[in-house]
Image (cartoon, rainbow, N blue to C red; front, side, top):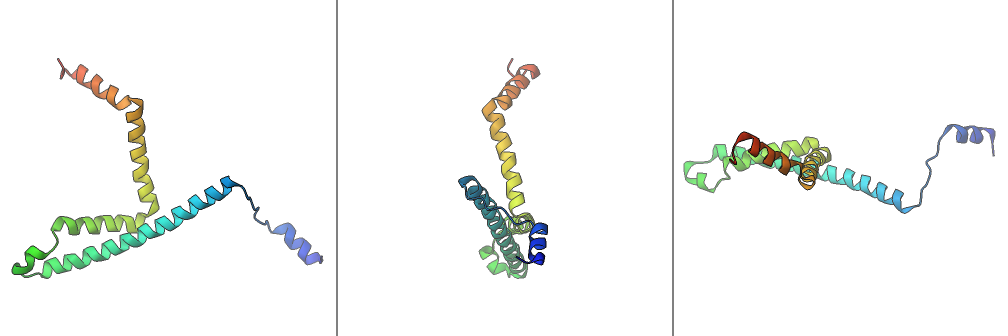
Length: 127
């Protein structure tokens, strides 16, 4: 080996190749999150554009064709959800899922039920 090659090997940290199941699944998880997030962002952009198209169509519609157009609620939701997914992607869905996980854990632990019954007893609702 040449001296330059030896010095380069000392300075450049080569990635370690782990060939175990745990590393494979961790890498697969991160790759699926990346691809899924990009897909969600793409779908959000499509929803945002389609919501804008429907908005323009609704505003330009004649009274006779107004019944065939999408409703204002649908257009607003397309724009809001499309914009949220277009900018948030995986992190937005992950945050929403984390909130659902917390709620399920609270329900599973009984803390929500105990607090609700305790509040009902102390407020005089049940007697």
